[in-house]
Length: 398
Image 1 (spheres, rainbow, N blue to C red):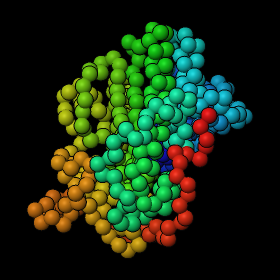
Image 2 (cartoon, rainbow, N blue to C red; image 1 turned 180 degrees about the vertical axis):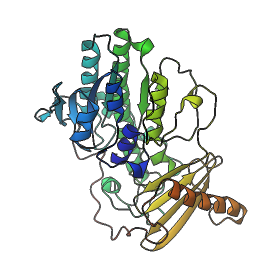
Image 3 (cartoon, rainbow, N blue to C red; image 1 turned 135 degrees about the vertical axis):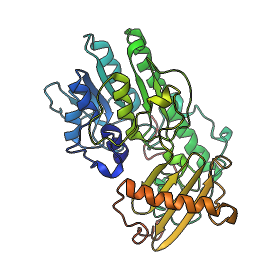
Image 4 (cartoon, rainbow, N blue to C red; image 1 turned 90 degrees about the vertical axis):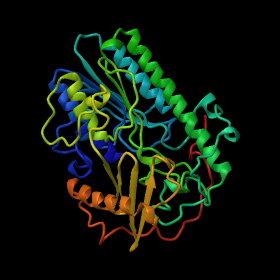
């Protein structure tokens, strides 16, 4: 959550921006300098100082990571740059944040352009979809992921973290289906709230000249590979949605390799702003306009000092160094998008492994990886704690 948002708002890669984003020019600051009104609602996980630099006003701002969706502790940001006292949101989080965004759109009648940032906490657990959304999806009718496993085949260094203890071990089809039903219900409810915001944009006559960007900060396993959380480098946890819609954005779809920190330079080009110095991201405008299929040939991802990965359009390599044990996975994503068949020891794929291992080391140098991954690695997960009662979340539905 925190690194993703730091990369999004700074345009910088993982190790070139601190979590609190101190000393780095931020997206909201750039928009203010260009004459935009700035407004935020929802989750802000990178400290109040960076929030105050980024936005001139805001409502129902959650300065935290996760919360009871029915009772989110939020604060309002006044135009004088001060955060008000915390209060408990009176509605489910997604509706609360959508209401704040809609109120801003209706009240902002000045010709001044605006930058509206809406950060939903859903579908983060506790997975407690409200009302009709709690029963929208029948668990029995939900297909299981093709790569579902009872447990992960080896210790990845994060076997017993909080996310992984939301369901018992080993994973069972019944439990996975129930979690997916709750997860889908949360997403559908959030989708409805986004629809309300977009409808307000149209109702206020701003649809034609507003750039809308939808993006997720991370994915989730929910039973895939025997995991439940995001603390891994598989596609289900790292491949997130990214949608651009608005003026000068043609309809289409792309499989280009992109980062969250590509969004800032893309926005700068689309709205005619200079890209600040120090930005690592690349503008996606050539991909959006169909001029290029890719802006880079690979992406490099990392999780703590436990896991490193490099991904090309077709091939992907994941390395683990946990408790002195090194494990390698090699996947052909064109023929195995679910990452089921590990080809690391397949002699027919030896050249692909060799190439990607060299590429991984090149990427670690390029992105200034501070960890001596090959020689240090991370600690093992340790003994498994007692399983907690399986539930979509710790909060009862209302």
